[in-house]
Image (tube, rainbow, N blue to C red):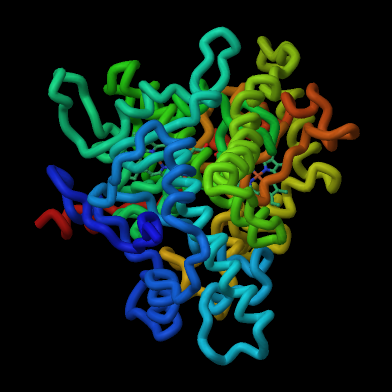
Length: 474
Ligand code: HEC
Ligand code: HEC
C-alpha cells in the first residue's frame, strides 16, 4: 500500500522555509504529547490493517483522477483533517481506536469494522491526493475546471500561480504566493493553524469548513470571488488579517482562487468522511479498473456538490432596496431614533448579545461568552486532538466604530440582514418572516453607525493638573 497522505509529518524539500512548510504533526497538541496523541499517531502512521486493496487499484484510481501517474512521494503533502474526522458525530467511538486493531476487540465483527474504517481512511487520503494533488502540484478534475462561459469551476492556472514554494518558475513567472503571504497564519492546508495562529485572536480562518464570515451573500451561502477579493485587498480591520492592497490584481485573483481550492478540498474531505465513516460502503468493482472507475464516480459526486455551492454563490447576493432618505439632520436623527427603538426591542434580539449599552456586554451586563463554529466543536476533555486552544468569541463592542466586514452602510446592512456566518450573530432579515424588514434594517444601520459618535462612546476624561505633568517631565 502506498502510504502517501497517511504520513502525518513531512518535510518539504527545496527552497522552502522549514518552519513554514513543515506541516505540523497531525496529532500535535499544544504542549507535551500525551499518551493518547502518541497512540493516535502510531495508529494512523502504521495502521495495522489487512491491505485488501492492491496497489494496482490505487494506482488506477490515481491515474483516472489525477493528471499524471508518476510517484510523488518526495513531495510535501496536505495534512489530513483528522481532528474533524474524529468528531463523535462521524464516528461514534470518537477515538483513533475506531481505526486500530488493539487486540482488545470483543469479536471478529469489531475487528472487521475497524479494518473497514482504516480502509475508508486510506480511501479518503488517496481520493484527496488524486482529486486535488499536492501543495506543490495542485490538481482540479477537468470537469470542475474554470468554464469562462458559465463562470463556474476552479481556475487551475490561477491556483498554480499561488501554489508551491515561494519563488520564480524557470520561465520567469511567480509562484508560491500563498506560502509567501498567507500560510504562516492560515496553514499550508488552509486549516487556520499556521505557526503564527496560536498568538492571534480571533484565529485565522480555517477554510476547510467552507464557512466564511464577511460576504455579500445570504448567511449559509458561500462568498463570491468578489467578496474574497475584497477581504484580501482590504484585510479585516480589528484583526490580524492584513491588507494586501499593494499586490498586483492577477496575484490577488490567484490567491482568491487558491482560497477557494483549499476550501473545496477541505470540505470535500469532510464530506467524504461523513459519507463513508457515516455508513456508505466503499465503491466496488469486478476488476481493479472497474473498482477505480466506481471510486472515481463516487469521489466526483461529493466534490461536485461542494463546488456547486461556490458556483451558485452569486445567486444569493443580498442587494438591499434604496436606503431611506436621510439627507437632512432631522431625517437622519429620526432614522437613528427608529433604529435605536428596534435595536432595544425584544424581537430584534440585538441587546441579548450586544447589551442595551451596545458595548457587547450582553443582557445582564456581564461579559457574554460564546464561540464561533470552529471553536464550538472543541469539547472539554477532548482538547488533545486540536491544534489551537479553544477561543471565546464575544459580541462586538459597537461603540468602537471598528467593523470587520467593512464600514460602508451597505456592509453593515448585509451583516444585520444575513448575520455573520459561522458565528452566533443571527440573520435578522432572512427567511419567510424576517425579524427585520428591509427599511427597518436601514434604520438599525443608521443607529449602529451613529453609536461611536455618541458622548457615551468617548473615552473617559481625567483632569490633569499642571503640577502633575510638570513633575513627570522633570
Ligand atoms: C497575520 C495573520 C494573517 C495573514 C498573514 C493572513 N491572514 Fe487571512 N485572516 C487572518 C485572521 C485572523 C482572519 C480571521 C478574522 C475574523 O475571523 O474576523 C483571517 C480571515 C481570512 C479570510 C476569511 C474572511 C471571511 O469572510 O471569513 C480569508 C479569505 C483570508 N483571511 C485570506 C487570506 C489570504 C488569501 C492571505 C494571504 C494573501 C491571508 N488571509 C493572510 C489572519 C491572517
Ligand atoms: C446571539 C448573539 C448576537 C445577536 C442576537 C446579535 N449579534 Fe451582532 N454580533 C455578535 C457577535 C458574536 C459578533 C462578532 C462576530 C465576529 O466578528 O466573529 C457580532 C458582530 C456584530 C457587528 C459587527 C460587524 C462587523 O462587520 O464587524 C454588528 C454591526 C452587529 N453585530 C450588529 C448587531 C445587530 C444590529 C443586532 C440585532 C439586529 C445583532 N448584532 C444581534 C452576536 C450577536
